[in-house]
Length: 258
Image (spheres, helix red, strand yellow):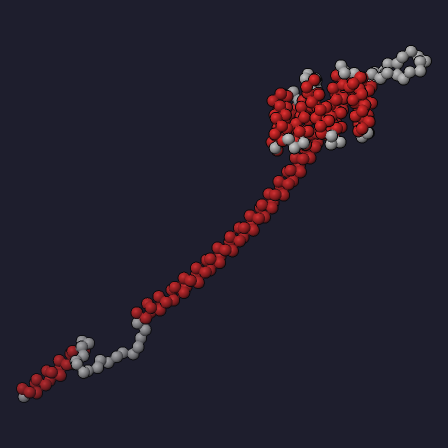
């Protein structure tokens, strides 16, 4: 009886140990069907996640490159537009400068016409076989007429002859100035410079001095002497501001652009 009780107790203990997950030496524990474990899921996520980040990073890089390329194209278009605007403005400025110069020349012609109010030429006794002597105004007017007709060589000779014949006449200074303009037009820069300097140096109070001073600077620039040209342009601004607006404006334009 005692042996039977011990046997039952041993069997009960073995069953209890099996239920608690314990296996005796030599026994095999039953294995449940394979189910994906948390560790497998976690491992799978760890493998998949880097791949997803790589794809996401590649997409972001591609998007950034596209955006930069678009910005570059927009900047190129804006630069082209700005270049066109600058060219248009430069053209407009050049046109305005030319219009100023044309108005300046026209004003000089009008002033000269007002000063040359058609006096009657002096003549010697009637019947004498001598050519009439022209007045200073008529001689100047004749030279002006030749210039308007673009007979520059003849006009220059007439200007110089008039200035030589009537050195004390105010119009003689105008004649010297216009002689310089013709030399400048013909590319004879040294002669042009000499004519303008003669006006500036010898007729300080004459109305053509501001214009002649500007033209000295302009001629020096044509000779490539930019530093000397700037000195003369500054002289125009310093000496004639409020007195000769056109010459001062042209001089300031030069100083701003050189």
